[in-house]
Structure formats: structure tokens, C-alpha cells
Image 1: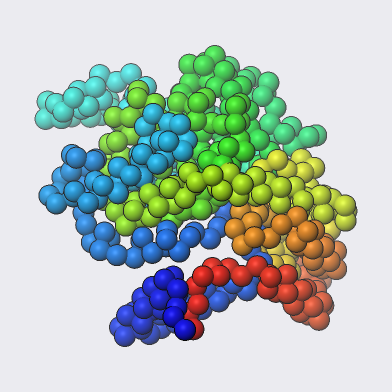
Image 2: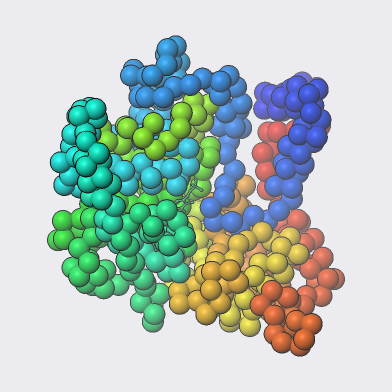
Length: 478
Ligand SMILES: *Cc1c(COP(=O)(O)O)cnc(C)c1O
């Protein structure tokens, strides 16, 4: 029997790798097996298509291409130009953006590019102006000193980490929290929702240069029209980091006030989360910031990754197909079914539900920390991650939450019925796990007690559930 193209491609690739370092080939094969077997509810992960994966494994990886399309610091970049232009074109069409910069290697890199572009555009600095018009040699030591002083301490207002914001939005341990004079807005303690009046008040008091919206763990839509009005009212540049929900924007689930692209001055994203592309980042903006954004490499980034840009072009072409909108809608339908199933069984959810791809369970309702819950679920074949909840009493390490998301399982084809079964399995494990004690008898935030027989039963039920929805059904490694 002849094999299909995907199976042949991956089998051949592994054979070539095996001839050099068989342990790497084995690990690649094992990773597919593990992914096939796990009920993956990690909100930031997905499964890219075979075409996207294959576009990365080739000689584009060998090419240096610093600069931009048609203006490179290296010779011989015509084919890189082709794939970078295709990725940018698809991104612009998909998101309705005037400009797309597809070189960032990751979401964090995309944010650094955006921060730089905004600083360069906004900061009143005669020294910076001189530096920008390529009079670098004319700058004196005093000019450089002034430039560093003027660029530092600029103000950023972003969503706090425990309310669901991202560490690159001014959180202290990240470079953004050290470069910028930072304040954050949280969520309403009663509802768990963003209180736009409070954001406006914080903006009026603090007068940020940059207002950042976007999140990694907020289970609701954000009204970007209102956020833009707030930014405009204080003269801030409005940046949206849509890393988590770019697939919902691409699939037109988030439209109007909830589509960041028409409202923000600049939008950053990853390409590997709900957007279902290769690992990487991207920046979208209007013509005003385009030149500064295009300086991302070598200003902030190392040489672009042409093989990843090729894969971005493939994945973005996929996201432009009509069926991607159906996929995006199913992600949200599944998240809502999962939330419903959990609520019905008595789980406590931050904001009481979801209108995006993720659900945040407050596991203090089960008497557990996030860390205990995460491990107990993992023992039972359910892969999640612990996450702080707003005003978390257990801090960012132990936490009180479990974040779950549906982009990956939706790619596998699971639907609302399977989400209810998933909720049942999760509730069974969480309600039958109890906190453990330290050696001296004090309560532990990490140890827990779960009957291994129960964990095994649930693992079996989870793998039975997945059996009907094979991952990469076209790939048979033999
Ligand atoms: C995941 C994420 C990032 C970082 O993406 P990386 O590719 O891991 O660097 C940035 N911002 C937000 C909001 C994210 O969720």
C-alpha cells in the first residue's frame, strides 16, 4: 500500500535524522506519541498543520537576511524576500492591517519591537532625532547620555499579572518592568471583569506613554474601542498584545469593538497559539509606525528566521481559508461548553464563565492550590497549567487557579459533548484530591493525596475520549 505524502515526508525526515543521532529521531517520534495520548488543555498551545511544520525543516534555516524585504544587509535574499512578503501579505489581508512585520522570533520579541517603535516615535529627544537621521557620528557623549536618560523611565500602563496580563506588560521581573515606570490596572474584585472607568482613572492620574491591553489568562472579551478612547484622552499610544486570541480575531469571532486591529495604534501577537502557526511573533500597525517597526532587526532582533517566516506564510494562508472561521467559532463554543460543564458540577470559575478560548478555575473551591490541582490532573492524564487568580492568596508560584483552553482539542475535532466529558473527568479528580501535609504536620501547598486507582481510571477515560479524535490523522510513522 502506498503511503500518503505526510507520512512519507515525516518518515523520510526521521530516517535521515536517525542516521546521524538516533536519539533525536526517537525523541521526535516519542513527542508525537505523547501529544497523541494527552488531553491537552494548555490554553497557549495548539497543533500546527503538517504543511506548516514541514515548511520549517529546510535550507531557509541556513540563510542570513537582516534588514527588510528588498533592503537586506546580505546578498542573495531573493527567496527570503518571497516568503517574507507572502507572510506579510497574508497577515495584512487576514487582519485588515496596513502594515505587517513578520520577523519577530517570539511574542516577547514582538513586544520589544513594538516598545522600541513607540519610544522612537513618541519620546521627545533631540539626541534620538539626530540618531534616527543617521547622524550617529555627530552625537557627543553628552547627547548619548541625554538619549539614555530620555528613553528611560517612560510610563506604561498595562493589565496586572494576577488579573491575567502578561509579564511583558510591565511586570517587575521582566525587562519591561525595569525599563518603564509601570502601573497596572486590575479587574473588579466582585465581577472579575475589567472596570473601564477604573482604567480611565488610572490613565488620567498616571498619564502613560503606552497603554497596553491584552492578556494570557483573562477569560473575557476586551472592548478595544473603549480602551482606545481612554488612550486618546491622555495622549497615550494604544498597544494590544493579542498573542492568545489572534485566532479568534483571524476567524472573525472577535469583531467590531472586540477586534483590536482597527482600534490599536500597534498590535503584537504570537503565531503559535490560537492562530495555529509556527512558533513566532508578528507586529501589525498603521503607516505611522511602520518604519520604526521595520527596524526591529537588527535594533532588537537577531537575524530573521526565514524557515519560520515560510511556515508563517503557510499558516496564515490556512487561516484565510473559510473553514478557519468555523474552527475559531468552535474554539469558543467548546470553551463555553467546558465552562458550563464545570459550573454545573460545582466548580468556581473566575468571572463565572468565558467568552473566549480559555477558562480559569479557582481551585480554592476544591480546597486545593493551583500546584496541587495541576499535578493531580497530570497524574490523571489531563495536561493543564496552574495560574494565579485575581488577588491570589497563594502567589504566582503555588497559585489558586488552573487555566484551561480549547484551541488544541478543537483542532483535534473534539466538540461540546466531549467538553462535558472533560469537565466530568476534571471535576472527579479535583473533588477527590485532598491537600497533603509536610513532614512536620503543617499543611503543604504542593503535596496532595489522590487515590492512584482513581487517577488511572480517569487516565483511561481520557485516552478513550481521545481515541475517537486522532491527532495528525494523516501522519503514520509506522
Ligand atoms: C504567550 C504570550 C507572549 C509571549 O510569547 P512567546 O512566543 O512565548 O515569547 C506575549 N504576550 C502574551 C499576551 C502572551 O500570552
